[in-house]
Length: 115
Image 1 (cartoon, rainbow, N blue to C red):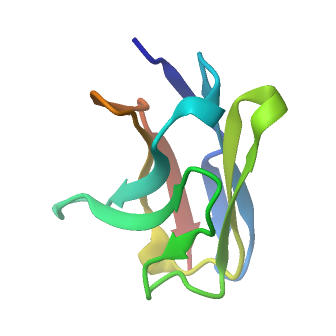
Image 2 (image 1 turned 30 degrees about the horizontal axis):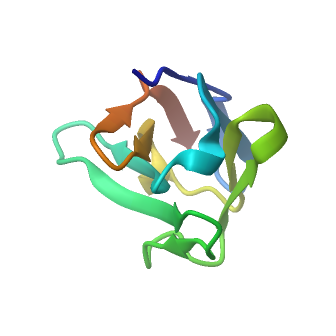
């Protein structure tokens, strides 16, 4: 069983920045992949960024160049640095861990970008 605890969401003005964190209960080195998703009101959950094992992150076109996904293996934590935020980035952001058996999701953290 993997537990994920997210933090870092909040209210920010357009053009501002936020850094989301996702702390895992186990060693993230053993996971197949880690990812961030988001879900805006009335919309389906959508992919934001993903990194496979020790690979390079890939990003959705809508966030490419503005968001950066990283990880701290020693702290079993992954991050999503979000810069140049836009009102359309407003959503609940979820972290996800993919193991070789199951996928696990965090509880979500709200990000609200005001215009």
